[in-house]
Length: 406
Image (cartoon, rainbow, N blue to C red; front, side, top):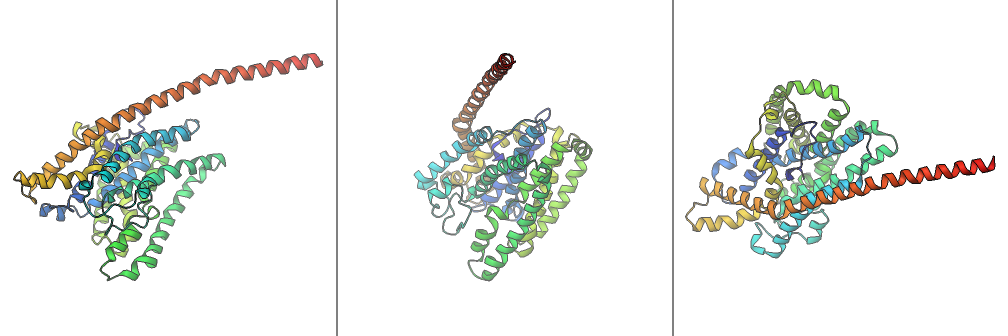
């Protein structure tokens, strides 16, 4: 997941603008999810749109992951399945399994009702048919499921297009998938959600069939892929667009403002069908601004946002369980359950926990990943001279046979 702090495929320096956006995304998610606990009243009024922090992560993931693959294509290099999945595995799975083990081994870590079956977490299918009312613990991992599906199928689609020399059809495929997203949401609405309108369990049905399934939430990922393709394969267009970074930033705010008002009733027909693509468009423009050298987001670095971006995946995984455990302890220490002090201390505790998770799990496995990739590269390089010598030996043999026969 790109809240894991994956580095952008920058042409030169690190893109600080993307760190700012990762920090913004995880902050929105943390503030929004904190409302499930005892919380200050101002959170309800200010964090109505906080659920879209996940959509910002989707756009970032689509942009960064596809940029890495597109850069190989534009350089004439072969896309390596093993290398891609080694990178994804060591970036995501160790920390995920560590937190998952805590959830299953320590019941007091559960922030809500029962956990879904373990196999749903291990197969990343928790977001299909998900009953949040009865299995609400560790529910936020649904977005990781969406991204894992993207990581699995996107390189397969890309390699298939390359194999059939149909790379130019990629834009058509993006448009088709975008339209199919509308079709999927319309089908979900009329087939499953509308019949439950007015029922007490309407919200459960809406989350199960509209909000969580991967096929309804592709817009952000597709927006990121589209931006990456445009910038990688149309460098002149990129150069022109990125001259206006600050203007694009302002336009993104207008688009997101429109999305905010459209999604005031998040489970309405208009928000369900048109809200996700509009949110994706707004955050897509924000990503374009963040990677534009002319934009203030690009030019200004921050140690704080870089740190939060680095810890974002660990924070995303552990924050609910940590806050659930921390609030009662802090209340005994004298903090008011709905007070601002409780809110900020809980966030600090969650951040410190994420820092520990990063140091004892994420960092060592990322170091191991680098060693594996370096060894793999060294092995491949050592095979090149052997292949060359073999080919040369074969040519010599052919020449000898030709001389004898003549």
